Image (cartoon, rainbow over all chains, first blue to last red; front, side, top):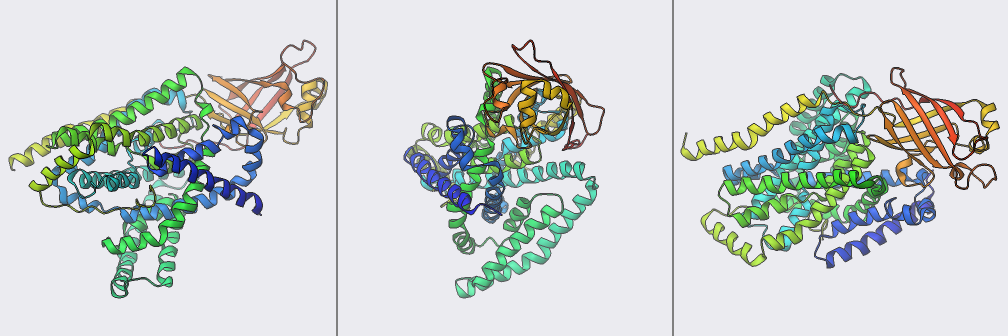
Length: 434
Length: 174
């Protein structure tokens, strides 16, 4: 039985600190989510456990973390559903070859650079229970991810969501995330199959059957929900409960198949109808409690697993610096180069690269999976969390420096005058990063 | 094929196709790399009670309720070790930090941190050092080595044997 007093105390402390630190970061011009990620780290062994081990062990005893983790995982399950709901890779078609090339290069460049870096880091930060292939593929997928919600929030704040830069960035980030999650699914399947002794082909076959069931049986049912919404202007409580049950059911199926809860939730979101008002309506129903209550618990749980003290000595900090450098060069450099080569003006291309380099919460979700399946070690996990924080934190000031608002709007308006208007789907961004 | 399409195909091949070929090469060459031996997990500790009783730190260790197991959290060639089955990387100060060299492990921690209550024999400036060798051929893996106390000529080393409880199989393909 959970110690309810302790659990409620933990939640209260986490929520209070996340609001305070998130507010401070907002004043610094950063998305709130960056502050909340930082607050999680402050509560872990990197700060609280280091300066006040007594308070830390009273507030977060090891025996109580299971309940906190369970609550935070439910939050992430719903969050991944919302991310899947907001993503519409078909929008890429509206942007022609330029966006296809940009999005694909923004995946392959950091992915390949991360694989090269793995040749150096694997003998130093891994162990012989992890195969090099799993290690390198995980590093690749972790470095190529983009924080779709944070990116959308930055675009909304700057009034660039409907600009060419905004629509290409959103479409590219959507493709990046779908691709990154597919690669991660492959790694998880391989890893878990190796542990359980189940044939990998059985697992892959099961996942394909499940995906077909979702697309051909569940999707038509979801369309009926959308029709019902269109007719009445709202969904009944039963309909919303059914939607939530389908999310949980889908999550359970992928977990049972040897994948992970989060893939099922993401898949459920991805196959949802993409009509804008319907998406907005569903987001509004689920976002608030997820973002204000459950996600801070996830940040805290991640912070409790992040021990910056493990990054000890100049050698370890050099590895950490290399990770940040390679992640930035791969993502920012790759996206900038590809968009510039396809005709985007240099300044706008650099702005796109900066936006694509934002990793945020999506990175933490992926890293948590990597630590759970032990593909990455605790020290490497901490280094990657630092990388996620640095790359997300740098996005806003770098964008201000490279592309001042006035110039960016002028260039985007000029480009928009020469091209048909594009439409960007806004994911779960407004509350997540606000 | 129009000129635009042809340029796109060329650019796609150069910027996406070639890097993917490079990735295949990296994955192939990486298979030859060797990483440090895995010691991560929870280990069941077995030591001679007579030797434990003869050493002041052995007595302190034996008096702990969690002394029969220790947990190792490994990051490459370095690791943290804590008594009990709780993950030692959570920032607790009573964990030993150590290094791995081939199949040999070495870790040390302040001797007084293993005592559940202050006592005169074990602690104050002394270090408890663990030196052990992993046997990678056994499944689950086993460790054999000694605990010794620094600056204590009269304290005999305590020999121990440990077996990993959470056997870790290959995490991933190839």
